[in-house]
Image (tube, rainbow, N blue to C red):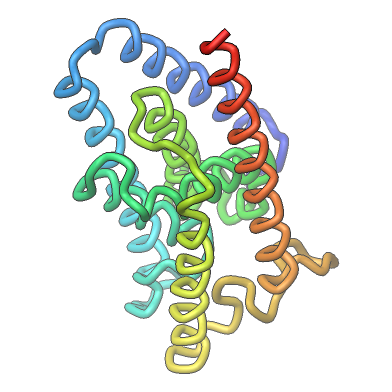
Length: 233
C-alpha cells in the first residue's frame, strides 16, 4: 500500500519539519548578531538545499531499475528553483538578481507542495528516496526564502521586476530543451497541467505568478511610502 496524502506520515512530516524550521530560524535570529554568523547560517541552509535537490535528482536517475541520466536536470519549477536558489545563496552576493526571481517560487512552491504533495504515493512510505528527498527540498527551499528576508539578504523592489521575466524565459528554454532533445514530455508543465484535470499549465501559471508578484511589489512600495511619510512627521 503506498504512502497516503494526508496520512499519518504526511502529517508527522509537516509537523516535525515546521517545528524544526521555526526553531532554527528563531534561534538564528536571536543569537546570530553579526553578518558573518548570519551568512554562515544562510549558506549552511543553502548547502542542505543543494544536497536535497541533488539527492532527489539522483533518485530519479536510478529509479525503475534503469539509469536515465537525463533525469539529473530538474524538470519542474520547484526542482529547478531549489537548485537555482541554493546556488544563488551559496555563490551569490546579498540582494543578487537571481534571488528576485526565485524567492516567491521558492516559498510558495515549497509551502504549497508540502501541503499538497501529489507525489507522496510513489512508494510504501515517505522514506522512499524520491519521496523524502522531494519533500525535503521543498521544505528547505521555503525555509531558505524566509531566512533571506529575516537577515536582509533581499530588498524586494519594482526596479528589479525584469528578473521575473528573464527567469521564466530561462526556465522555459530549459523545458523546451528537455522536451525537444531529451523526450521529457511534461517538463515545466509546458504541455501538461500541474494538477490533473486543471488548466494549470505554464501558460496559465506564468501570468498568475507575474500578476501576484506585481501585487506584492505594489503592497511593499505602498508600505514603504507610508513608513517613510510617518518617519518625517
